[in-house]
Image (cartoon, rainbow, N blue to C red; front, side):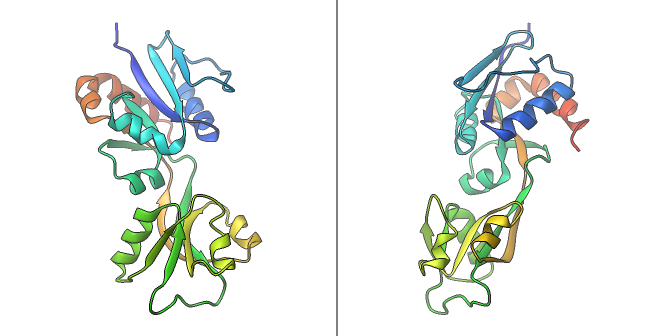
Length: 208
């Protein structure tokens, strides 16, 4: 009997898309999952257990080994730099990280300020292009920062660009492409290699 595999998944749309991918890859999973309250779903037929978590927490669970594998956005992986193996780009939930601000504005020459919920990504990007910036960490309504004069630019996830447009902001720099990735705990990857590789090869066949 295969030992149980624990998979950490982000709640919401990514879960639905990734769950459907596993079904398409031939795993015996229930077509309908009652998601509302559950934090764990046991699938005895496949000897799989799903842990449902906030997207930012998935790599934490995987790094600490409470989940063997997980599905995490590239934005979270770049920001957190956890010790996990990145196994496969699932090519779902595609978007990108960009800098944005008010149209036709320059960054402050002396002390440009960047508002973001991705302080590491922003700092690494601006360091990489030789800009010294002050990072202001915000958790929500990042678009407000340039409008109220808190920051010259924001660094955030952009999918359609509608939110930027609605708030009168324009995109300045494309920083990184983002999609959901399959990641593994390094120890689990060694101990349960055959099982994890089987999932990878089955998913590879259906990645769009």
